[in-house]
Amino acid sequence: MHLRKIQAVRVKPAQGRMDIERHADHALPALEGTAEAADTPLVGSRSEIAAANCTGFSNRSWLTGLVVTTLSLLTWLPAPLGGQETTKDLDTSIRFSGDFRLRFEETDGDDPGNILFDSRQRLTLRFRAGFTKAVNEYISLGARLVTGDPGDPNTSDVTLGDFVDDLAVSLDRAYLQLQLGGLSATGGKIPNPFMRTDLVWDGDVNPEGVSARFTFPVAKGITSSLTAIFRTIDEQARTDIEDSKMVGGQVEVAFEPTRSVGLRFAGSYYDYEIKSLADADAGDTRSNYLATEDSFLSDFNLLNILATARFPGPHPRWPISLVGDYVKNLGINEAVREEDTGFSIDLFIGTASTQGDVRFRYGFSEAGTDAVLAAFSHDNTTIATNYRQHSVSAGFLGLKDTSFELTWYYYRKKRLVTIEDRKDWVSRLRLSASVQF
Image (cartoon, rainbow, N blue to C red; front, top):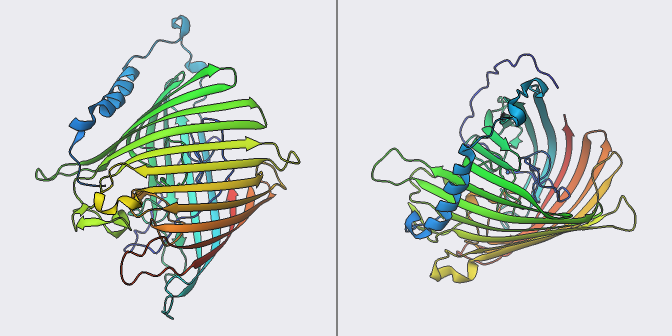
């Protein structure tokens, strides 16, 4: 779509922290390595491109060096082939896309015994609109507007019914991307570049920093990718508090012997250095253990292994896909050593690519209290970590670019941490209608 003019939109600011929670779109795993990643608990596909008292980067110089070395390679830009100008063939139009979702949600058993908060029904909406534009043969620009609380990166959902207040809208992406053959680099508030599920990364989280990705063929039907990132978690102007950062890397291999069979594997390591929680709110700490009001109990050095498999089913419209994810926090505090791991398994039957398609999913997941950094993990339910969860969903692509989905979560706390904790099961039902444009 060609846009000749984009007008500024004046939006009423949010009044405090909204009562919003993240959606859960369960899309079929995309085995192609794309720059965009879907807003799903699975690996990235079309609509979305991708804490502790630590000892410092000196103990992890190899990882920092990897990031710096990868990014430094991008300083060399060859001229176009033959020295000829190629801008006349460049598509410099603005590419516009977005989506809108309306959802009904009912949660039962969230606070057993409390008649005031045990059950809740609500209506939520999400609106996202973004664009990308090629500036020249190497550089492109992207940005996206979303609804939701700007102070909560885990969701763009808004609960309706706040005395008809206007909706807050903010930028959740604004970035430049450099593309040089199989090598790309992105900087700003960027799409999450990693293959992932929402066990570790909520689909709404868009990191702030720089990333680099190099994709190359290994053999016929086999491709590999190397991804590195440097993130600023919390920049401090004060000299008595160090900045909080994260460096991470991922090795990914995709094997597709046929169009109907695909295997994909990824190994990742995410090293967080959270120096202070002075500027953090409840949404930034969520369910992780705290040593003091200003520090986490554990460090967060996450080893993450992810695999997907796609096979033919009994009919071309009923392929079968499996997704498995495992995470272990190597920086766990010894006092809570048994709460350092998490995993998820999802089974998909069907597809959601053309009108009339139907897709079913069953998933099971567990996570220890400090297995992941809760600030960036999923918020499909009311428990960010320390949970045991079943989920079932059915999706129907009823009309062109229009889908309907019914999702049921059945979950409880995995371990009783405080005297008020209970192991009662909680039920959450969601019915969603979505359109893409």
